[in-house]
Image 1: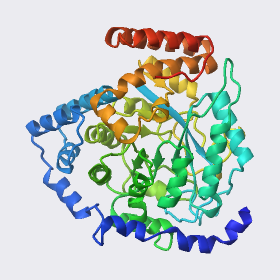
Image 2 (image 1 turned 45 degrees about the horizontal axis):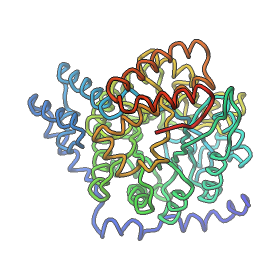
Image 3 (image 1 turned 180 degrees about the vertical axis):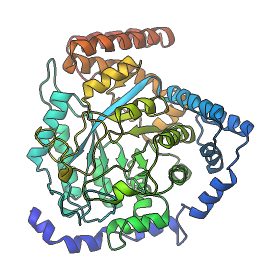
Length: 499
């Protein structure tokens, strides 16, 4: 079957892009990313007024999406005192919307075959040094047995290359397999309860199948919003060379019924300030047309990849200081959204990012194909898309968060209770979702500790849990009795209890 799909690759390529599923949103006009307008707004905001900045920060703290003009002002702040105020407000916004929680997940790369030839990517089809592999369905099961049964993850982001071997049929089959695996743990069973998807742009028809498969968030990163740069790094004879097919993918997702979408840019391909503005413009367009913005925004930085010169010698490499600033500004500009930082970054950068607005991160990360079940692979450059900056275990990351006062949440309840799309956006903006999540974070964290943690980690984490329980008792007294009932049931060995 796989050989047949490879043989039919030319036919497959010709039918991938459906122009009518681009033009239906543009009506013959240009797309909604206006490069000249973005550059102009960044230029005219070079010297923002301090009073205006205070007003902008107040708006962000009220959990309202900022305008392009307001965001341009924040991007151009150079005064150290004002920037410090921005960082403090960003953390305040994060805690207002998401309380004291950090969500963890693991990426699972299911294959590295790709028909595209992106100049910055280790999976590009012309990279002869890459060792190509697609996980079989039994191999997918083996990977999940480790992730869910030995490490304790409850969420995955599954990553697919764009290739007929990993088409929508493979996606649906692999997702069903992931959800079906329930390995035994110390006291209960492990299980992936939410599968998010990072994949190539799909058609409306394919996206409906992905929705039916029970996915969580659907991620498609534009990589760069700058049109000329996009054309330069994505050869025009490839599917990915079509800017519009990628840009309007989230429009198609909403039309297909997927109401949790994730945006992102690969920082380092073009000016980082422009990319922040592009992400905001994309989010505002979705809010305008569908009433719902991005559920998550990701901030990957360009990292070295084997045999890929651009990944090491870009003229737009983002410094650590600028990276922390863009995180701060994005948290302020799109205050309701979850923000994801990955193990591309070092442990130190990730620690600092959590204090600036990041709400989700991966841990125990392996991005080699089959690397979770095959411990001998390590960071094999010919098997993975790029090199990682942080390879610590999930337990190490959790223990660090706990020592910082954060509770790690494994909650997936909102997605199974219908708190998605417009519903969750309204709850987030009003601060109500944080209350549900506070309760469920306590339950799921205790579940993970009982099943997977060492004695030392439990001692650190229990201080955080008891603090959270006391906060519920004081500020959510009506929920406290039920929380304690559920909490005791978790301690007695029950699993997957939630509000």
